Image (cartoon, rainbow, N blue to C red; front, side, top):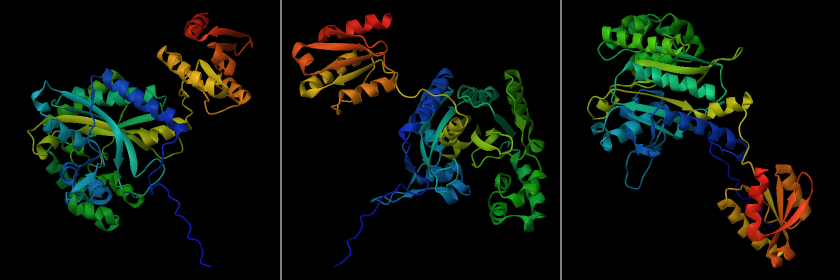
Length: 429
């Protein structure tokens, strides 16, 4: 007799996972705090498609970056369009700024967004192939004060989330006028050490020397620490801009560290760049957020020269840290009453009463599918509600409700049309 073929057990794709109900309160807190803070800073929400023209990321993020060369998810369509799942948010928001004529509005334009991004990389702690980011973008103003304000937002965000062991690292990459001199200095330094580099850095030496400073391989770290610093090669304008950013941060009393090896992993950055790290004793620093100025991106995408600055933070790592640090979050709604029902007639009346309570702004919990009053009362007790509203067959016929005080055990029967008023009186007491 032939063996019965076992049905396939489906699992989430490698590097992707389900966001489960027990973690929802942490995710909600990060998003709510980020959204409220962004709006306080004058940012407006924008949503862009999960799928964009692949060329947008190739040209915007940089053809030789790891995101484009190794991690991007390309999408095949019936019409052979060259699309990609978004690996990061900035190019899509820049495209929306250009496409929707935002340059004609009063500048600067301040936008925020959050949602999933997709990068095909090796999954590890806090790093997923479907990751979630929250980002800010400011278009149309080159003032150093906006660089500082973007960093200030990060500082406030982590304080409000209860994560205080963070340090901010900052650097300046200069502009197209002064960067060539720095690039030459970097090439001269690394050429004499080529044989000691990892394979990726040997490739970077040919394709994009700035990426050499972004290497995480252990064998390249001693070489990287002695490399020329970009701040030593800034033109007068870039030096003045960076000095102003640091002066604003000093005025705000926001602590920071100058890191000459900081370059970020994207090609569009100019002038100020920064990253926010979780700094715990005995552990390697972990990047939580990062950003900087990208004054040439709009021009590179075919628009008019437009100064811009932005940042993004990863929700995945932040949620993991909040759980590890035991940050307190609201665990579900604060139910005031519990609806207890018995029999078909009682269940029907309970559904109607649930709607009435909802309209009156009284949060009611229920377990409509259960028949046992004992089990329902246990649920009410577990939730810590003040009152249980009991509706059985007799109450359904009499159009009444039994209000039971869960603390004293005292019960009172009231008409169904008076139950909302009666509850409001009791809550006031």
